[in-house]
Image 1 (tube, rainbow, N blue to C red):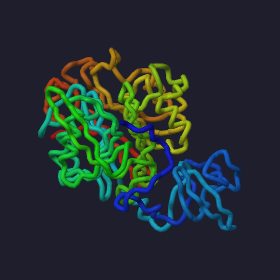
Image 2: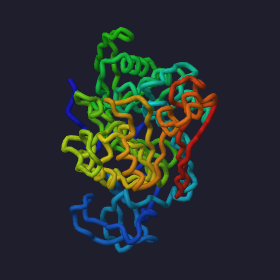
Image 3: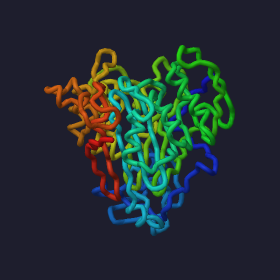
Length: 434
């Protein structure tokens, strides 16, 4: 039986192989976002007393850290806490960290989501699914894209499934066949579909893989499928359970699971794993299909039991990010203004396509307008057929794109590339061909 929800919980220790160093740094200083000062508080909470102010150009020694906060010591010996959302760790690894380069690729898979991230010493894939482009083998658009940008890559260190829906997982089984996979992360919420059956079978067949969910640590459970295209029992071998402890990725990079919940919701969107990637001094928030409630305008507050409401209640400061891969493909079910305020991103990436969700083609115009008011918006559907005035200009008929060419299927044209290097974060469209 599924255990109770786990999100923004007190951290549990991971195995030595997964536990990151506290921070490859000695000091902390206000980030470039700070114009006046960062408040130094008595405890790791905005409800505690203000002890001092750390102004731009000032620094303090790091003596410890908890989720969302650094414990610091000022030059006068005062000890307190500063929010990680408004500070940057520097010092021992500061100069090196500033020179690191990371790339975030939002792959145009048609109607779905796939985010590939690569940096020094690691490669990560968050979701790989589509509603309308289900090619496999060399024509799998996710595999074709990764091979085009990283022809040398043989291993994906971390593969994350946000939740078990077709448009987030259908292209994943091929990924196991083409790359060595180090760690698999998902909520553990089972969906008795052929797609999820193929995914979990592929994960358990992967040699040396370490599988993590939000259910339990170092035990096994059995899942039985009876679909026409995939059936039988699968023994799931669980490694260390997902928790709030950051996971080291590579040089200057770490991964934080802000929301993970394995309960059997009627809609698996309620199980969306929300991940924040810290890439050098920049942050990337991957929201999956995390929702704020039913379809409503952004100004409405998130409904009490929604993921956005839970995140705002438990750990709003941890949401602060520079890039948001927008929740639920830009649907009115997500991206409430209060949530976007906490995130405070300057770049927004929407992965969507022409397949309708309950008769609604996403993204919703109200969400796009709200995001454009806040920063730059890039969309993987910008040249999909239903939006083009001239069929010959549409992605579906494009004779040169990632994956199958001119196949009358969306996807492969409007990939989004976000490059992070030190203080710089730049976003552009990547119209690759293979």
